[in-house]
Image (tube, rainbow, N blue to C red):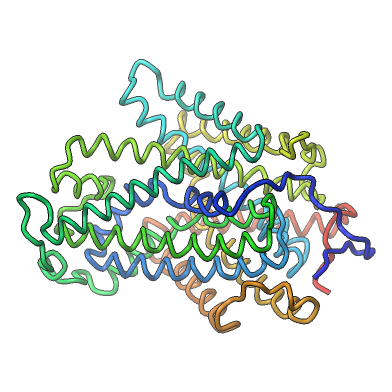
Length: 469
């Protein structure tokens, strides 16, 4: 399926470097999604679902898997640094590409502030002489420099960051299985007492499992960066297909496996929101300084996610600029193929978000955080709708490009859309999550409104992709 302008001239190839390898893409996906949400935030899910949190992660992971399969199908057929923003534009029109691109960029730069502040809080406990804002400044400067350097260097740094997290989870799983089986000195086999006691496997019924889904579904956000990075790999179509296949299954294994170890080893009633269940498990098996060890892992996870999100934000806004939906000045690319102005624009807003987080965490920044709380679901929904529209077109115009296909099309795509609708409805029913849906809906309405006004005024440049024709 060829990419053409409305006047049928071919769209020029992106001037970005093509040096990322398949291993970089795979670990970039893992780096973007394995973070504090798993190591710390999973405690909140266990507190409401009990051992049923395993089912919650399976359900949320299944939804994320379907989304990534759809996104992988489109990205393998039409790789682009704008990924789902470009797909939405091709499928639904310019308003959709504009809206999903800017919403995702805003999501990344706000989450970036949370990650920087979280890493700074941990660092401040180790070296209290340095204020929290000082650590934030150091992290932002270091990762800005990393993203301004050669793309290959960024890929290598993120590869090793993610490798450390993956290694920590693998060691945790091995240690947990050994403790459950009674292979550790002085320990008897655990059995199933913690899975069947304290109210049983579903102590709060299926309502608890559903609440657990709401608590953990957003932990899978970040996988999308794989398809953004694919445009800078040495073989975009083939690499993105392989990376999507491997990253999703590995993450499901890590998430579900970790939760199964936690709820088998310890009573779910011992879990408290805000406290890492991983620390509780390590303490229970006698690992010295378990809290400090987990602080190191969470610290690395936060910095890795910060690095990946800054990369994703810069490439998204660069793609928007390519299509005339962001200032053209952001198209400046270094000799090494790095969109440096796009990086600086993203990190500049990231700095603003960090300052708001430090100065007004319970007011201004809280409103910003709520405004992106459900944006990921809106982005996922547009991915699904785009895949419904583009699949038929690709089959008609370039069937050979479908090297990765969505399972049971179109039924599973519709099922994913129904599941996302159900999640939004359930969030509206919960007092804790309702503000996120309302604020995110307002932010989405503003961006879509701006896109519609912009399109009606005809301000798109000649470089835009054609509407769905």
